[in-house]
Image 1 (cartoon, rainbow, N blue to C red):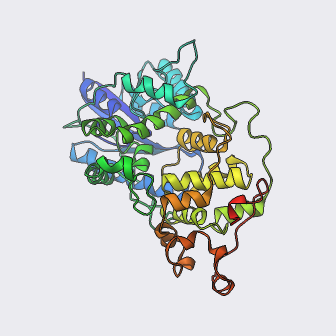
Image 2: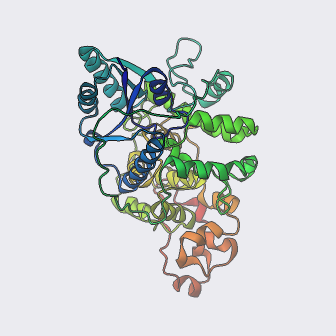
Image 3: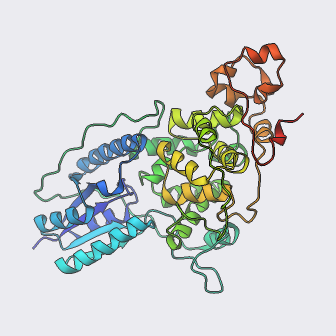
Length: 441
């Protein structure tokens, strides 16, 4: 009698180094890769909806090349997975473990349903490099609260072995289902989704990875990997990416991957990371200023380095990491607006927006999270001079300032009156906290 397994794919949309898919292919005669379009997650942003659609289409092509297919259903993932398991007579169901409250509830419901149906449920790693619950601090804590000791433990942890890509997948007789129409997205320059696109970008990136430590904060040079959307949807394996970086002795890039794992282990024990300050009694003095928030969202604060970052976000569905720090600090520390407003805005536009990293980084900047220096400030003009010294990044995204040469573009309010009046660009918003001391001569 043949054995059949269902693999419920969630954020592991790849065939390379996919532990759940590899285990199913190794232990079952027939394998049904399943993705459920889940309305319970709410409406994905247009950008991420398009990226997901492209990723699913690419995964279907890869599975078909191996004799299988991607089975698509819509509805509650637990109900659809169990319905399909009954239809094909599956005795095994695999899924990648995740850390969000929604994912954990889905896993609990899957376990209960599998117990009732006498289906063997297995949870697999794959979303992070080191399992979120594996590293524990001394003294009995459930998770590391500070990055540096976590990083020390992470660098000595034993990583799982990468798994082989299935050569052949045998699919039982089952209707595969159809992808819905391709969403249009909102960012015209957004990256294309899918494992194939991600692996092409990875191949190109590995040629430059040695320079990451020197170039990753260079705003005009854009020396970042831009792989984060592919990690967010699991089009690339974080373990495989870490292995490639290790082979090239690229410690600065590995450190960034460790930050990603760090916030996953935080979210694993603090599921309210997107709504509640991690540090008790932090961040209770936010200012209600809808007009300032709108100016920030639209890239019209009058501070060029801030506006350039916000316009890049809308154009590309992505923002340079240094610009993320600058724009988030401006909203929270200079304008005094609640970090959760910024979190939601980034969540609308970012292709890589996920709960652990988007929330953890916003809390870090706002001083409510895991930063050991919660009162840290980012002077936007000092940041601009340091990381965009000639104003190339600013002029790239703010055409109104294209006529201003060199570093003067960072402070258009210092131009002669006539030149300033000719600009179709607003004056800077004033901070309610520091009276915009960085505007002074």
